[in-house]
Length: 114
Length: 115
Image 1 (cartoon, each protein chain N blue to C red):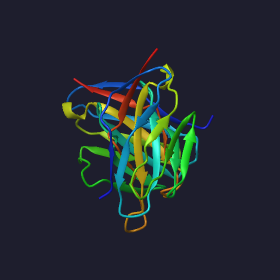
Image 2 (tube, each protein chain N blue to C red):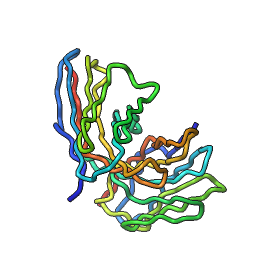
Image 3 (cartoon, chains in turn red, purple):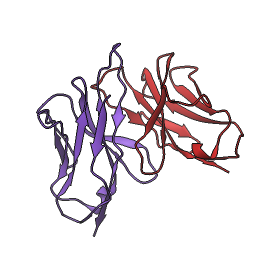
Image 4 (cartoon, rainbow over the protein chains, first blue to last red):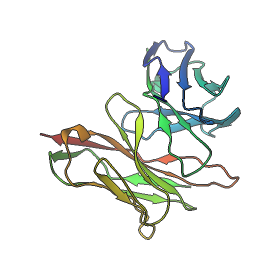
């Protein structure tokens, strides 16, 4: 089945220790998104890629970076995690930049910062 | 900017009860509207969508009608099951200036269905 895969599902890191979350997709979609979701809140878009074009949300902290080496893979790097970065991180894909198309989400990575 | 407002949860119902989850939106253009569902420990998955005014989206017994005059997209189901317990997110996608779009989500409404 075509899908969006996130690894790991649970990640524990220490305050200030860099961490990388990964996302892969078998849907061959052009667009990939990273969201941060805290408890009882809407997913908050951090950035998205349209092919290799990177689009950063204005309020995404510099602490968050992303890489997309090819169509299938996308990484979220948190350079110096703080306690406030503990959240669920969701990766999603989309076929095109179009308001008509839905997004396809992975299961998420729950990040704990000690 | 665009925004989505959902009713506060949790919504607690008995099995076979009628469900309504309210969603209203503000948008500058002509958005598409979506309902996503998130089961515990999982990512979001599309439940239904509507891309123009008066369209009705439906799936798994859930329905929502795109009402431009009231800027609403309320989710309904005639008879809920325990397995419908989840968090439901209303969302919109709209063209922004420059030709791109950014999807906007509501805060989510938790539904708890008791046997």
